[in-house]
Length: 339
Length: 135
Image 1 (cartoon, chains in turn green, red):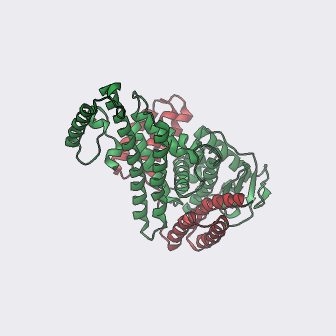
Image 2: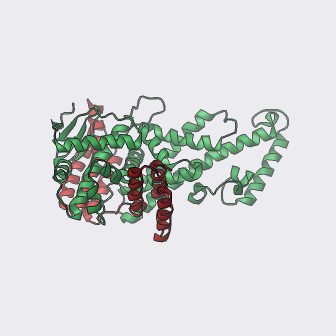
Image 3: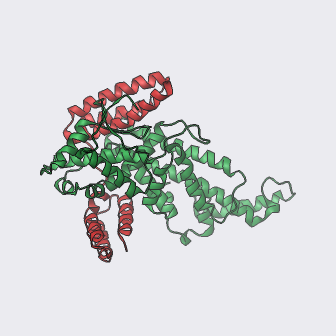
């Protein structure tokens, strides 16, 4: 048990019952299993108001969580600010409960990256807070704190991760526009993964979309590794933005843009790989690049013709499958706008 | 139509309606209310309607803090995650930053202070991981 945690919160207390109910509701709403071990302990260090611990214990702070929940349990009518602080306490517990629903990072797994570096923090905190903010009022209703949602009306909780939340929202919106997959499912499925594995998962999602019906490229594993690495490195910009002295609205706008660009760049590369595979299949196996079949000149002519056609259609971006197959046959893709 | 249908739609709108005008948000609310009216179970129907009423809040990003403490806390937490050095140096730096962030939280207006305290939980994860690495 981590020594930074103090006494166990009495299981018969109102605060424990609220916390257990919030964790249960997070599990019900997300559909994700939780690593929570049933223990809630007080944070000894006043610098922390909540923590999801490796052994599955939830830590909570006295001032911002326990005291707020006790006040709520009294049933008192609160002013808007105090009601909003009850919501903040619920958000603290829900956010940490979501971290307990996420697979604990295992850097020893194949394909993993160093844990908790800036891009990973940006994506993990962003997705977790996006989910929490979307669900906190539902959770309050479910655990019997719904009256404070109304009492807090007009008084908003402030975002603790504004650039990360804005970027996560943009990321999910872009993935939704490209793949048509349900945003709630996308968010939950990414949250369910070990944070270090999410880059591969996003790469796979777009690969499945663009390579649907196309024979997989021969170097798929290498391609996937390279693209997931690039996505991760592009997403690092979301975090770096917040180290600047720029005004906060500019930071969140820049973070949103950086997330869109990261997805757009990935989408473009996957689509190009799909395009190459389609071209290879169309020309036929005997014409595939790299084979010394004596027909290189014809192949180059065909490739050049294709390239010329596409440049005429889309002079500002590389050849795309949409350009070849007719963009009008598909809904507008978010990545085109973002790129 | 069930509660899940409305719930999924609301989540999607919360993601995609960014910067939409009031008329667009309200048009979606009307459409969803008509859908929710078809939910057989009364409890679920009322729950869905109450949730639809909250779409304007979901469609807006959470507000930014306005205090200098909020802006400083965001910056130094981000800088701490970017800090390069040995594990021991990173641990010491993150620990100092967390102390400063808690001070800023105490100095800020209550709602912003609560948000600033929440920023520290990402540093706590970093500190725990570094302690783990050093043992």
